[in-house]
Image (tube, helix red, strand yellow):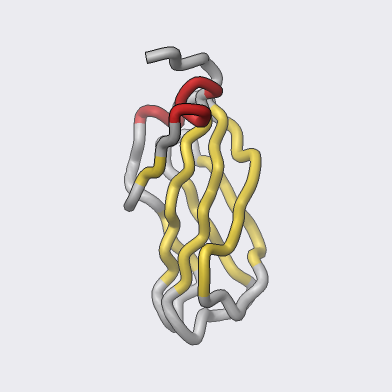
Length: 91
């Protein structure tokens, strides 16, 4: 998975995770990331190529994010999931 940080996002404790759903799939679960502990999903944006409606976005206790669509993708699609962490990060 790719992670995107900007100075503003880092100051506010927001991490944007790319969740890539492969063609003919309906679900992707990202790799475990300890930065997501205690976080909350605050948004999801389609980056490109989606032809399916997002059914659910879940932040699991295993530090992973799962994105599920209502139907299978006809092509690979990337969703940007924004997670706000429970603590501030001023590093």
